[in-house]
Image (cartoon, rainbow over all chains, first blue to last red; front, side, top):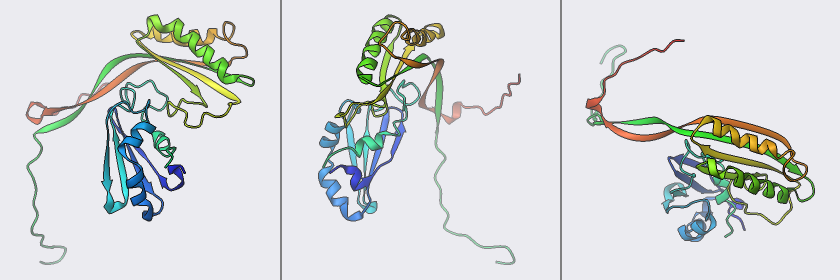
Length: 99
Length: 153
């Protein structure tokens, strides 16, 4: 199944970094996300989009994951020539991942 | 304590930061863009051919080129569900240049596809603008003097 079926996501930006949250609709699915949505799998899934390192933060107190993706915005918000320079839509790229 | 008076205790604080965070704007060159639509039979293939033609024609006067197929891969910069044939595609070319004039050439090249490109291209739009980049730095508070300058036209 796709992540979109059990979780939602929002994207933030700072310089050339994109931050992607991953929040299960049902808190009971948090452990499944921790187990399945590893840094390696996200790197593979977002290959070609995220060109730098990815760090995952587990925030069990709010049942959420945060992925900090470096070199993800084609040089950064102000100088990118992409059509979505903030990468706001990348949240749904993460949700396309199969688990 | 009395009418309209309360006592508060236990307040604490930290020294104010020694540095300011400053967002510095700088002239980051120019961006030229052009868009054109293809629809119907082999729309994506025609858009791809047009994109390659433009890429070849602008590569010698641009520093960076982006070719997007709107409706296919422009937003995520990748298509996670590529197993279908889109009915219509909008080609978008964006490129960085070192002058406003060269930025405007990008759109001109796209417009030329009307008569010198794959069949049935329509709806050209073209844009050119200066780009201002922003970088964040820290500077010591002690070096800053607060003052206001009003610019009027």
